Image (tube, rainbow, N blue to C red; front, top):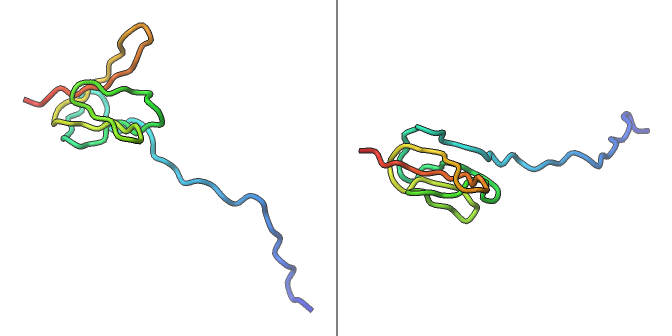
Length: 86
């Protein structure tokens, strides 16, 4: 005879790992070229001057400088720009 009951099965027990999305560098921060500014799904934030966009919509700095967030247009489009450090 078995000394222990058989372990029951479950239909739960799986989850996806966190994706670490969000703003990584805030307005006024001094960052270096290549630094990630925003990790996002889709273009919640759009690239402005001196900001590049990756194939997964990640925004990154093209030059060293200060980060600035702006809203423009009738649709209040959020843009991220870099003011070059002097």
